[in-house]
Image 1 (cartoon, protein in one colour):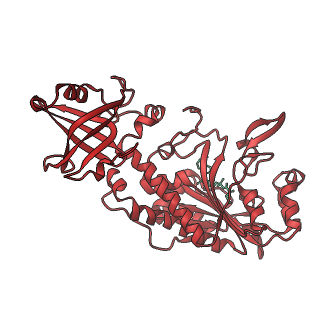
Image 2: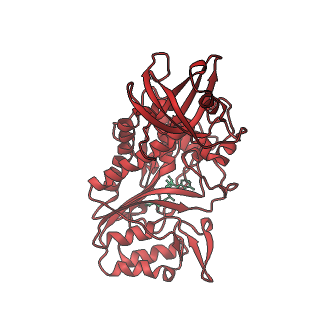
Image 3: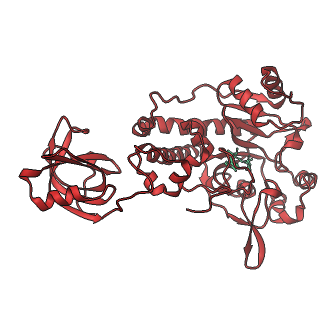
Length: 433
Ligand code: AMO
C-alpha cells in the first residue's frame, strides 16, 4: 500500500495514512476512540462527534471489531493515549468488514482453549503474546543460521520424500509415489552424512521431519522442524561444542533482538545460559537418577531414560546437560562405537531439565563396520546402497546432531505444549488447518 505508515512510526506533527485492524472502539458519548492495530503496535484515533463530519464518525464507529481499515489524518501528542500520540481522522476506508461474531476474541479478554486457538490461528496470532512466540521463533532460527554460517557451514535442503526410513520402521508415514511405496522422511540423517563426504564438508539443514508416532503428548509432533548439523573431520566432543554453541546463540539472539516480544510474554528478565553444559556419561546419569530417590523403580544399566527419569535428573542438574557414552545397542546403526570399548557408543543427547532437545554422535564412517551395524539393527543394507556405497569412495570421519526446533522454542519460552510453538501443528487429531 503506497504511503502507508506503521502506527509505531507515526510522530506528532505528521500527516499519515495508517492501515490495520479495528482492535477496540470506546464510545464515551461526545467523544469516542478507535484503537487501530498493525504489525508494529497500536494507535488511538479520536472522534469528536460534534466537530467532525457525521459520515466519517458513523463509518469509524459503526465498523465491527477486527475489520480492516485505513485511516488518514494528523498525528498529535496526547499524554493520556496509550502510546502518547493520537490521530484525528480526515478520511476512513473500510477495506474489509469483519463479521460481528468472531470464533475467537483477539483482544484476549475472553480466554480460548488451545484447540479453538489452533482452529483459528489467523485470529489467534493477532494477540500480542501469540504473535511474539512466532517473532521469537523466527529470530531463533535466524540466529542459529548465523551461528552455523560463522562456523563455516553451508545450508542444504534434502528430500522429504524417500524410499527408506532411518529412525525405526514403525514411525514412518507411507505414501504412494507413482505407484511405488515411499515415505515422508523422518530425518535428513543419511543425506547430511552423504554431504560431509562431498566438497561441502560442513553442512546444516533446517527442515521438516515426519514421525508417525502414536504418542499424543505435549512434547511430540507428527511433523516437526529439525535443525541438523553434520561436519567432516569432527568428533562427538566437537559436535557437542557446536550443539551447545547453537543453543546459546539462539538464546542470545532472542535476548538481543526480541525485547518487545519477551515483554509481551511477561518475561521480566530473560536468562541466557552462560555456563558450560555438563557432560554426564550414561552410567553417571543412571546413578544420579537412582540417587534422587524420585523413581518408583530404580533404573538398571541398559534402560533408556524414561520421562520420569529425565524429569528427576533435570531437577537434580538444574540446567542443560549432555548424556554421553550410551550403551551401543540403544543407539542407531549410524552412530560409531568407542574404538577402545565397542559396548559404548559415541552417541549423545542434549537435555533441557524439561525434555530431550538433541540426539547426535560421531558416525560410523568405515564401510565394513557400517554394513555390520545395519545387520545388527535388522535393516537390509542393500536397501541403503545409495548411501553405503559412498562410504567406499572417501568418506571422512564425521559427527553431527539433530536439534528439535519446536522443543528448543518450547524450553526457551517455557511453553506448556509443543503445539504452541508451531503455526499449524500436525498431531493425531489434527490434519487441518
Ligand atoms: P532424534 O530422533 O532423536 O534423532 O531426533 C532429534 C531431535 O528432534 C526432535 N524430535 C521431535 N520433536 C517433536 N516431535 C517429535 N515427534 C520429534 N522427534 C524428534 C527432538 C529430538 O531430540 N538423526 C538423528 C539426529 C542425529 O543423530 O543427527 C535423529 O533424528 O528434539
